[in-house]
Length: 141
Image (tube, rainbow, N blue to C red):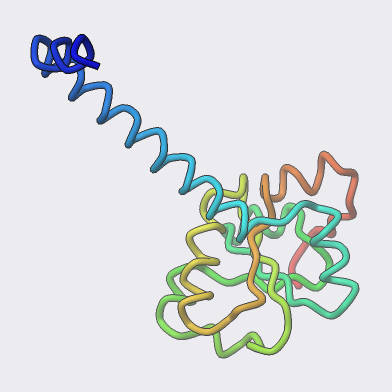
């Protein structure tokens, strides 16, 4: 034990850097685990949709028109932040879809803060939906 204390006293920068890296790894791991609680797979999204969940697509109109989930509602994240979430029901599940899953995660956090406890982000976004061979419709809704 004396040798450990001697090493720490002789190398404070090395020990400090090691502690900071350990804290950073723990923080990142906790963040990833928290994110996993708000993300769902394509199969889970299909189950939610079959039970009546609302699909909110937050991509731009051009990408939405090029292909979206059946009955999806096109809504910009900024509109949700301004209180437009009134267009969707709090009691129903909500599946938020973006291009790759990163933007929808932030939107789901905002929806959860607004009381939408059943809001989830589609992990991997519309790309994941397509890779899993799920149906997309084109054109305006």
